[in-house]
Image 1 (cartoon, rainbow, N blue to C red):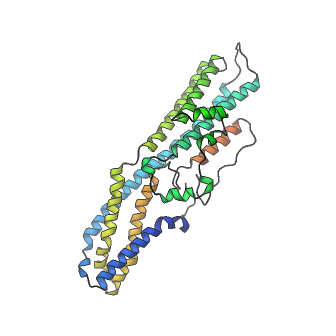
Image 2: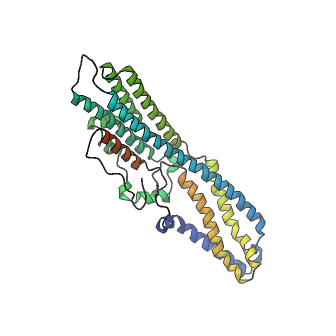
Image 3: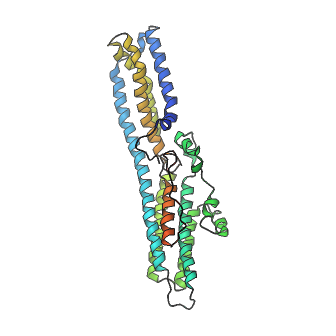
Length: 337
């Protein structure tokens, strides 16, 4: 996620330079043909082109609104995961306690169990984050927004086993990564431990039901993330938005020739800068939609899941009474992941 109010030129440039050169060269060739070679047939009425431009603007606007909806929904889901994680922590700390039982545990063991439940939850959100950032078939394409992130060493992902080793013992990590969906199985392990605590008398049936409801809530939020991840933005909208935008960009300079020639002969050359700017604006609107439609693909417009997971980790470990807490994630080059 880009966090500054204004996007600096060095971020815009990788997205813009190729298209600007193409637009400049294309309009220059057309002006040379019209003015130098006297190909007056290149000039066409501007009215039909303006009509196309209006339709394209509405269509691209619809696509960008839909892409933003996907991005905002993803951010709302991770906000819900944050809130539910805090609720999970206070429930674990308050509900898992000594009860009259034939198999009493010392307080140190209870503290270890509480820590295990919270650390396994941290492993769960970490596994979910890593899984969501795995690129699917429709994300396997050249993406400048993704490339800008990949060139920053701080944002390069570790393998799942390395990430999980911060919260789980080695044998549990080895068992979890063998599953096709590690995050799902981590919640399953949480449920099994809760059932064991209930059976041993360290949790009432009521508390057990409440904690199981929290696990079901995490499954719901995970499913919402997977829905966005596994279902791409409908191609019929995305592809034809690209086609219509470039159709307008291709025919635009021929209409500008007519309008500029009405002023005077030398004004024809103003077609070049005006066309370059207009074409760049329409192309940029199209690119914005493309870079926002997949909010989990590890690019600069993504939901900052790493930062969110770190904030959750700090909160939960602080609730456990730990003092050696990690630092909050800092933006690198104004990008927060």
